[in-house]
Image (cartoon, rainbow, N blue to C red; front, side):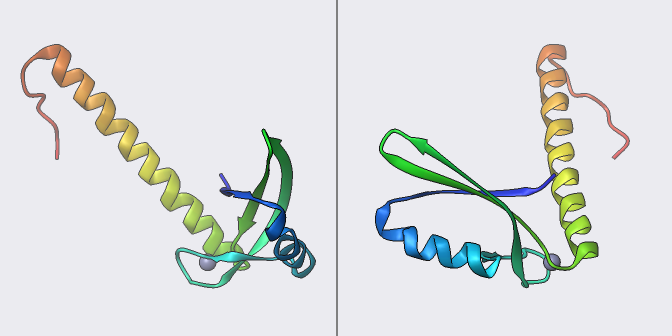
Amino acid sequence: METTDQEVVDSRDVAIEIDINMSSTSTTVCVRCGKQRIVLSVTKGMAGNSAITTTETICPDQDCQKKVDGMLGLEQEKRHQSFLLREKKMSARKPVKTSN
Ligand SMILES: [Zn+2]
């Protein structure tokens, strides 16, 4: 899974946007190592009168990017599991015994 930054820009920000595309680096930094992330792809679209730019960024360090992806995946999995557990508890109306 890739990190997606979504931002709404108006006409005044076009110059900045072009700058980012030319340098192929993003304004976001890696959450893990703090390096400036590389722009993988930029998708432009319109929502009403606003131009929407969706930028996919990756860490320049491939191993780090994999770890970040893993971290995010694990976090989502944990949330999903706790959600399922809560649903189970509510339907059973008594505590569910877990190994941890
Ligand atoms: Zn990194």
